Amino acid sequence: MDPVAPLLRTPLFDRHVAAGAKVVPFAGWEMPVQYEGVLEEHRVVRSAVGVFDVSHMGEVETTGTGAEDFLQRALSNDVSKLAVGGAQYSLLCREDGGVLDDLFTYRLGPERYLTVTNAANHAKDLAWLQQQGEGFDCEVADRAGDYGMLAVQGPLAREAVQAMSDGPLPAKFTAAPHIIAGREVLVCGTGYTGEDGVELIVHPEDAVAIWDELMRRGASPVGLAARDTLRLEVCFHLYGNDLMESRGPIEAGLGWACKEDTGFIGAEAVRAAREAGPAEKLVPFVMTAGGLARQGNPVVGGGEVTSGTIGPSLGVGIGMAYVPAEHAAPGTALEIDVRGRQRPAEVRTKPLYTKESI
Amino acid sequence: MADASYPEDLLYHAEHDWARIDGDVATLGITWYAQDALGELVFFDPPEVGTSVTRDEPYAEVESVKAVSDVIAPLSGEIVEVNAALADSPETINEDAYGEGWLVKVHLSEPAERDGLLSQADYVATLSQ
View 1 (tube, each protein chain N blue to C red):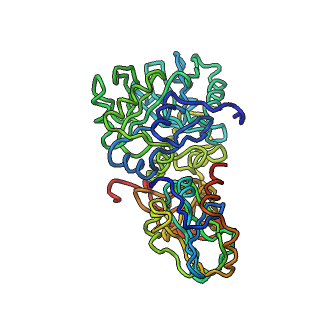
View 2: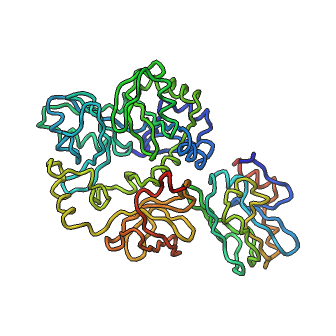
View 3: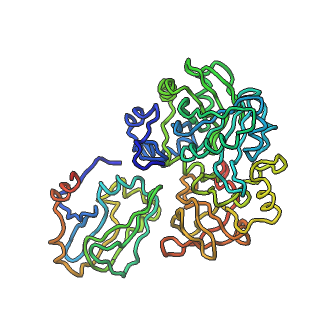
């Protein structure tokens, strides 16, 4: 990324400023990291309904008679299992299995797919996909500038959006076009918070009207800081923290999203890692005697924290770390070197937070 | 969070700390500006009673959701008390930075250091630079 390039703004930038957001540079965008407060924003998503502007995320559209064959080759999951109107999580891997990105792909039609990329990876993903797509009878198009995206999340999220919709909302892991607040929207039964809800892929010029209507119906704006604590409590990976090109899906615990028999790019490396067992594994942990671990803190005896902060719904420090496979079993005691001070932690099972854990 | 405030009866350090001096003991904390910049605090790691602190050196850490920050000592001395209530409710620092959100009490070893601290007016002037 060009460090001197001007930061991009989403269609909702003025709304964020008006709502009192702290706006920070993030993956080339000026994004709201928080509004009134991270902890309250976290709570509102766990208990009611919050709205995230995730318009910085990118979109790539793949169309044509060879679209399915191409995506089956490019993505780690079994794209042939994706029905029209379906949504699927997968990884984009290099030949050596290194993870280029983690993605949601929506099948919009028999020969039309929309793949959502992480903002920081969009340009890289697009170039990779277009290069790998040569020889397939399909077009791989950059659609990042054509969409805004709102994630409406929380136990009351569906109710709020349903009241604005012309028809029943799509079920979890499906997507359907609807008229929401009078605008054409692709409604997706997805999210990244561990709560029920939907994501709305919208035309940029419609984003403000839909945002305003969600606010009018009692939804609260939620920033990226709470998005991070929410996803970490349920152990969803964040690319750049828990996923990277130097590590593969198996050690990241994402073998479930890899179907090696499809022959995707990286399948042989993933198969080998699955059969041999990885040297290190990504594990969730909680701090057992106070303190917070942070990304980059070493684990004593080998390994490294890749995500760490407070779990607001749990009231303790939480995180994920790559540790030697022999230390990966739930219940294993860890010592984490937090700026020179060893703090005890314990490996837990995923997810760290469930409705029953409070 | 309360509105911005900087009591006139305190002395300040440019690293956004305050001191309330009573004889040879000073109560220390962080300013409204510091807690606002950090955001909601979720962890306070206090020093141990009996340890020494040195002016301009870090003596404790406060952590928000996103970041950890050193707390700089405005004065030198020995820790005689820490605010134990902050272990369970570090957000008190946000809610009442100059009152219930105090961090430590220090028995001053160099009382003359107070002359190097900033008045309220001088500290507030640094914030607008």
